[in-house]
Image: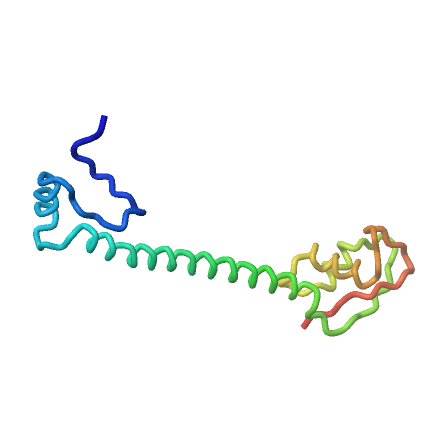
Length: 139
């Protein structure tokens, strides 16, 4: 059974011409200025593609800024050390206590401990009294 009045228009159909008198009267009722449905449809496509382009641009901007922030966090934790300071491990010292004494106030202790481990090629947090550690000095 075929529908007599259908609002479906194929996007693949090049012409949007009405084939029956009923559709012509509906078309003139919906578009009283005499513009065809094709003209109205063509004008709405550039607007929607501009919206899509804007959305894609916003998403790309957010992704790029996210990578930039993450890159700065990791870069500042390891590459901004200017000097090294030698520390002799006292009995009862831990990496945490050494880090708390020597780290900058705005740096997380865990990040500073990782920098100490990296500078001294330590695989575990175990240190022994009397050993000398090289701790980074950040400006």
